[in-house]
Image (cartoon, rainbow, N blue to C red; front, side, top):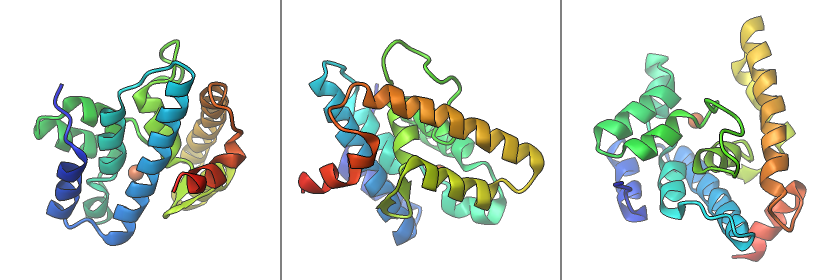
Length: 183
Ligand SMILES: [Fe+2]
């Protein structure tokens, strides 16, 4: 498996002229995801930390151009990274908005951690899952069918949150303070 290291990910963001605010968002998603990785590791659940880091940093790689093209940035981001030779990273990026399956395996996966972390970061701040999902519903769910879909993702994400935090010594609402304490 080829996974770009942190510096290479940052260069890739530069190469697509990623706007600073999305870079900052992606860095914060990465911090959250790695914090969760380490918490899980403390409970004996090992996930591929390098894979999580790369996918978190690169999850919105095609988002800037999607504003012009209207493309599905999760799908095209996955394709973009696969074409560059990082299919495993691409697979996680492809699922960062909606997972193919929730609770696909017995233990939380890299894809679940990146998907969930993106749902705790609004712009570059940590917010509750409900705040973030409320924002997503209001901003993106412009039709009745998108509304239904977003509400299903909201429910699935709350279940995912329960699952991830069942392995951690903190509650979801203590995420921000614990992340800051690690600085
Ligand atoms: Fe995204």
